[in-house]
Structure formats: C-alpha cells, structure tokens
Amino acid sequence: MNNNNENNNNANDLKSIILNKILKNNKNGDDNYTPLYPHLSFTENPTEMVIQFHINQYDKNYLGNPIIKFSEIDNTLQNNYQNATIGNIITTYGESEYTGYDISIKLINLKCDKNTIYYYQITYQNKFNIIKSNIYSFITKECNSLQNKLYKNLKNNKQLTKTTFNKTNIIMFGDMGIFGYFDTVKSIENYLNKNKNPTFIYHVGDISYADAFPHQLGLFQIALNKYFDSLSNIMPYIPYMVLPGNHEYGPKAFNSSSNYEINFASYNHRYFMPLRNNSLYQHNMWYSFEYGPITFISISTETSFENNFFPFSVFNGNQLDWLEKTLQKVNRKVTPWVIVTGHRPIYTSMHGYSTQDGQPNGECKIIQNVFENLLFKYNVDIYMSGHIHTYERSFPVYQSQIEKDSNLNKNLFHNVRFPIHIVNGAAGMPEGVVKCNNFYTDHIWTAGRYCSNIGYGILSTDYDLNKNEHVLQFNFYDSTTEAVVDMKLYTNKYLK
Image (cartoon, rainbow, N blue to C red; front, side):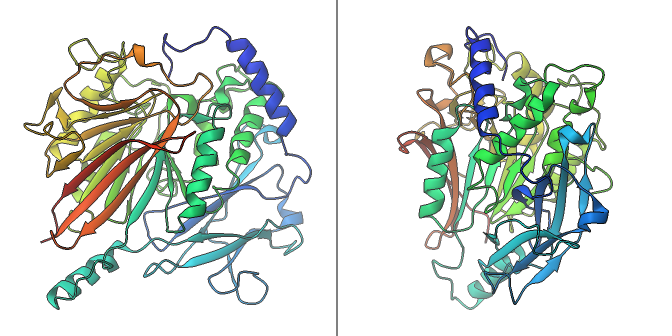
C-alpha cells in the first residue's frame, strides 16, 4: 500500500538499516549450483505438487537436468525413491548474473486419499547425490472427489461420523517483507510445530518489499533472496500460494538497462501458481484451485481490467471473462465455500479509501466497480485482501449496505447472501501497522478491526454432523502475543 498516512519521515534511514541487514545475512554465492530457497505450490490437480528452487548459475553440460528424488516410504531417500523431472522448467531473465535461475519440477500421481507424507531432495542428473539439497517433506491434501464420494456412500449407508470430513486449516496474510516480519514468522513456526495437519500459506500480495531496493549491484535480487531465506523453516514444507500486489511490479529505481525487472517479472519467475503452465496464460496473475471444501479464486487487482493500476503490464487472457467462467463452474456440493482473494480491498474504513458515510473511495471504488457485482452474482462467501496495513472485517455487505439482520451477532453468520470482506494486510512491513486514528469508527459495515500490532489469520473449516452443515471460522492472531484478537464463525448448508 502507498498512502500519505504511512510514516515516511525516516525512510532513508530505514532503507539503510534494511540494506545493512541484507548484506550482513545474505547467504548467496558459496556454491553457485547449490539448490536454494525450495518452496512448494499447488496445481489445479490435487495429485500434483510443484517444487521450485533457485540457483545462482546453471550449466546444463555440467549439471544435466535437475531432478527431484521423492518417496513416501524412505525418509533417507537412499533405497526406495522415485526421480521426478516432469516440467523441468528452467527460467532466467535479464542479466542472469543478477537474477539467477528458477527451476520448477512437478510431482505427479501423489496419493490424496489420506494425509500422506512425502520426502524429497533436489539434485542433478550429472551430479547425482553430489550437489544436492537437504531432505525436506510435505503432507498431501485430500482429493475433494474422493471426499464427496465418501460422503455419499456413508450417508446412504447411514454411517456418517464426525471423522468423515477432515478439518482444513489455512494460514492467510498479506503485506509482509524483509523488515518487520520476525514476530509473524516466529508465531507461524510455533503454530506449525504444534499442528501437524496439512495446511498451506496464502500470501495476498506485497511479498518481501524488495522493490524498495534498486537494480544496481543486484540489491533488488538480494532482497528477494533475503525474504526466501527468512522463511526457510516454512517454505520447503508447506505450499506457499501468492498473488500480485503493487509491490510486486519491480524495483522503483530502474533505468533502460534494467527494465527487465519491472512488469511483475520476478513475481512470475520466482513463483509457480496453477495457471503458469497453462499455454493460454503462462503467468501467475490469476488462478484458482480447490482445497478441502473451498474453491479459492485469486485475482489481480493490479492489472488486466479497465482503469487498472499498471496499464503497461499486459498478460495473456481476459481476466474478467476467466473469472466469471471460473465462478460459474464451481460445484457447491463439492466445495460449498468460495473465497476470492486479491490484494486491494473494496471495503476498508481507512481515511482516503472510504468516504465518511461508508462508500468505497479512490482505488477501492475502482476495485468495487470491476469486481463487486461478480462477487455478489455468484454468492462468493469471503473476499480476502491486504494492501491496508491493518486487519478489518466487515458484516456481509454489498453496495455499502449490510445484509438484513446480519449484524445481530457480529461473530456468527448463517446462510448469508452478501460477501464478507476481510482486510488482512498487517503481517509485518517496514512502515508498521496503520494507527487506529486513521480509520472511521462509525461505518455500518465494519464488524471488527485490529490496528494495534502486526498479525495474521487462520481460516478453518469443519463439518457439523448433527446439523448437516459446513462450518467456517476465521481467527486473527496478534503475532507477538499469539492471542486471538478477532474471531468470526460462519456456517452454511449445501450438502443435502
């Protein structure tokens, strides 16, 4: 987010502090072929997982093709394992001595009938087990088709139990960078150490804030690497799904010789989201996937619509046509919940982004004009965004009006028609959270706000057997105290 309310008085001093931290802790360069910063992402197929990593240099004659060794049986990967080379997408851009190489390999035919642990290691064809990464692991998610089939069979035989549906937990936040992230990352590590069930992270834009650093001397790339390094205890083990924010555009300071780093170039090389391997799109700007009882739909609030914020950044496909077709295809009997994610919000009570009487203003008005009618038309349950450096949750709202009687209990909603909007952009950024006095306090659609500290959310789903209804809960945590500072319980019935 960029706005006049952010504290920029000491911006130059702050950048100097960040730069000193980066240069002191940068770990690149010891071995130019060593696999660095492994991270995971979903595809549209629940039996697949993409493993992506970074190297400083790539010499195919010397290394051969990159390989992923993996196994669900042998955690040493010495005796019983498979080799994966599918995809083997190796990309670089601009000046490779700065940008390095990003390699993506897809694992296929993974088991998804239960929570299976897979172990994996990165190596190379010609340097097999000589140049290699550590051994990491991940847990597969459950196939929705199998879950739905199980439900129908058990219901027909009257054998439903409380364990029929697995609980789903997803860590969600936006706006986290290389300075100010520590408490959030530490808190999430603590959560993952205590909870071994499958999960993933969904980062709704503004990833790393590396754009504060210029192209010169490779500082922008060093900052990107620092961010991956700060999440080295998380990214190799659970999928890290992302979407573009305004800070993903590229370094603010660039010239004609370094313009290859703008137009969301690093974002589209460093990550591998579900549509990137689709020949019609080949980018990460928007996509969808299913996880448990949820269809997630990620949109670009930055590009690819009329009056967008980066009109010179053009990507394959018509985003709005794709979005409507994707919403039309959702099968609510398989995924009763639909959550759309984007970086910029529609509803926030921050001054400048809404009017005193609660109407979206400025850039929020632009996003409202483009997307809100589609969210309403297809009964989207939640729109999750970031950009505003705070946490705020709305009542079910459409066209600035709350759904009738939905405000009777601000923490419990049942079968509502209007979307709930959650601004979740306070995970840890250089400027800190926006202070509470920068918000209107009397908007009728505001149900909860937390502007005292950085934090993140955990979205959970369950199934109430007695009531035959799906249950969704969203908790927002203070990153320092790890206390729940806002909770919403939201239920719905779809399976009959």
